Length: 313
Image (spheres, rainbow, N blue to C red):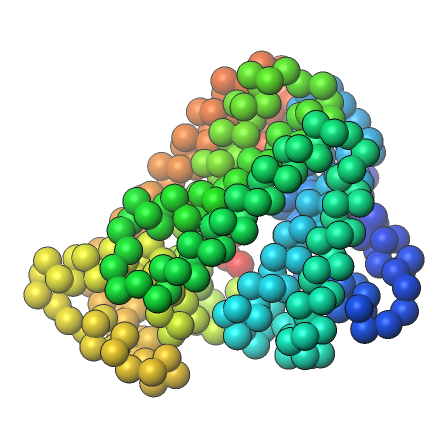
């Protein structure tokens, strides 16, 4: 049985046992949407990396996925997003208040699954709080006129990379890995997470909507300070080009996204972002190489990096 099969089976079992009613129906709906399940897979893979059994980490893997989906449910409200993975978002299908409360309950459910081992609960709490800190910075950056690339990297490290790092550290902890190796596998996850988010930025702007399930250029339309927009504004100013500023001065729905994408291509921002993703993926591989585990056990994680490098959604 593959890790994804185990996770999907555990999610289905969990969803079927939920009580009836509008507090729980959005949880089952969101958890049932097509998903990559990267974070719970990392829990299982890290557990096996250090000699543990994947079956013994399924509750924690589910807990990570519940927390991740809780953040998505609330992020979609904050972003006023109509779609999630090509389907209506929870607040669109139900309403905003139901989505807020269901998300809160989902967080409680995640903590119930993470509470069996004090060390795991502590790792989870640390990384879950970092995600919230990152989301707050993300919202603040939307209101600021200028955000630097270093500030953006610090934000996505908190919002995205830390949860991947925490997923791996939890799996390692469950298998009894030492503190040093827990730090090493977490570093692998951090670089993987940075690459993951930067690739998401690229896919949002340049990906095929049929594959991503999102509007093309949704972040640009919303004026979100992604790596692409930040570097585009910096390079545009250096080259005396104001197309991006002109478009950002318009209301979101009135922005000419194809024009913005063309400018990003011409300024070399897309190429620079792709190089940055490749560098983070290399650093992730190097961090994995330092982990004290047999090479054959590292193979699934190396394959996962290769798979994520080629993803289109």
